[in-house]
Image 1: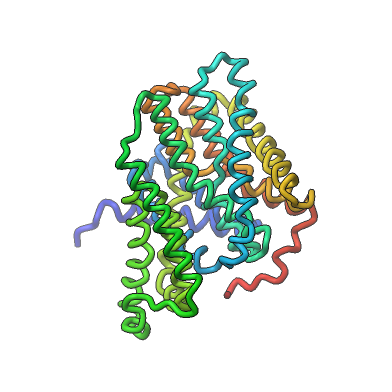
Image 2 (image 1 turned 45 degrees about the vertical axis):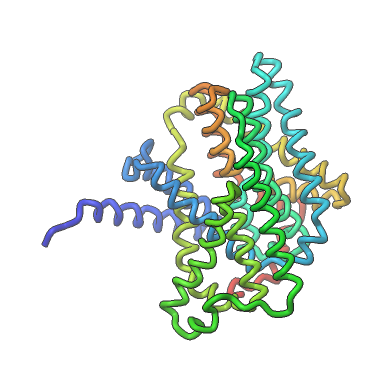
Length: 394
């Protein structure tokens, strides 16, 4: 019988990932860390079992989409809307202050204004995938603090659009009126749909009743709801994760969360794992080894700086010190969309290859360390008992 040459590799990857996951389970550490480590070990700079980074990244992007879809089914829209001031003002101030934080470093090393702005943008974005996964697993997502942090993450997803436009302009590219019009129209359409859904007592999903008792069709219907709205926001040059989040809220409004959740849960687990594995693939161990001191200093500055920066902003917006410092620790790492900003900056000549490698290493290691950083903040700030009322089966 013919043996597919990819099968031994797949078995080895699954075995390594499972072994790492079991070890982390014994150590009571989040599985996110295991996926990241598995990506590093299996990647081109480790055992080279996975070398197609672009393909893995594309698959991993579906993980972010599915994760936000599930989050949309779990959030409390009214509570999120009540915290819009924190989300919008907090995000905008944080972006400006992140640029200000990079400025003295840039002046010291004689960086261009374009590079300072780019790296300010990169460090200002937090990881939706990491934070939402940790909040969801701990049960904190339904609390006010979790909802406010989620609001900030969603606003950051929207802020990416003007960031990309600004980076393009700095690189000599001017966005077309058609693209800007699509983005504005798409954002207004999403807002209108959500307002309509939340203002009605009952929302009926297309085909919802027809597939309610057929599990096989439920899988396709649930994927169509999630990916369909993601496609529409993507065509409007908005974040596909934002569309998935809106789709999740629509499902909640239609009171169809039970069968949708049941149909897509296995897909969510696999693709979220793939996302974190794809981040691990980007970690160039040789580059980090050669430039270890510089990378460690950069990651330390990012984690401490973002924790304090976000904490101070939230304090000014009305949080108590313990809450704002914990929220600051949650938002401390650099997000997955910063990889996109760094790649666009490289393509536009704003940073060179060496600076790009430093940026990638800093982002990846901040994501890897982030769960430990957040768990440490919980213990130091005395919020470790916040998971006591969480029921994993809900």
